[in-house]
Structures are given as structure tokens and as C-alpha cells.
Image (cartoon, rainbow, N blue to C red):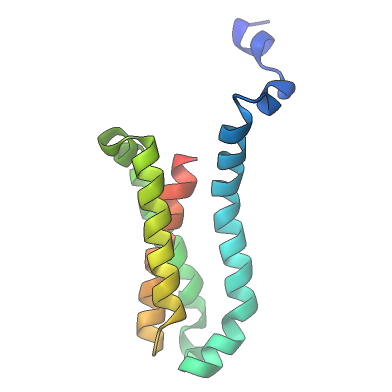
Length: 128
């Protein structure tokens, strides 16, 4: 048995020192899953209101593309600005994307908002 596996215990995740970091990792990972669930649930209404039935699949694709690109760059972002600042930036970018999507007058702005959400979500998830 190696030293690494001998020292790792599940209970250590719930210590006062580790619990906030563990909760942040779960929250950052959950963000992407929750975003997809909420988007799929509301898309029929969004498509009716802003005329996006032809672009229905692109709403998820824009988020996923932004998420993949940002996730691939999250390590570099953390090295350049520090983990805390990188997480704050990811959350801010995600919030801006949510705002763009919520206020979108048409499908083009909505898709842009979804891509920005994906970038913020990808950074957050990748950093967690």
C-alpha cells in the first residue's frame, strides 16, 4: 500500500479545514449540470418568445463550446491571476452571461449569452 492511499480517508473531506473547499468543488461542478437542466426546461418558452426554434440545439452547443474552451484554459488563468481571482472572474463572467441571456431581445443575443455563460461555467468547473 502506498503512502498516498494510506493517508486518504473520506472523513477528511468533512473536517472544518477541508469542508469549505470540498463544498466549493461540488458547487462549481454542480453549476454546469444545473445550468443544462434549467436551460432544457425553459427552452420551449424561450424559443416561443424570441423565435429560436430553429436554433434550439445551439443553445446547449454554445454553452458547451464556451465551457470546453474555458475549461482548457482554467489552469493558465489560475496560474496568472491566482485561484481566488480566477474563481471570482469565472463567477462574474457566468453572471454576465446569465444577464445577457435573460435580457436577450432575440436569439442572437441569447446565444451570445449562452456562450458567455459557458465560458464562466467552464472556468468555474475547471478551477474546482
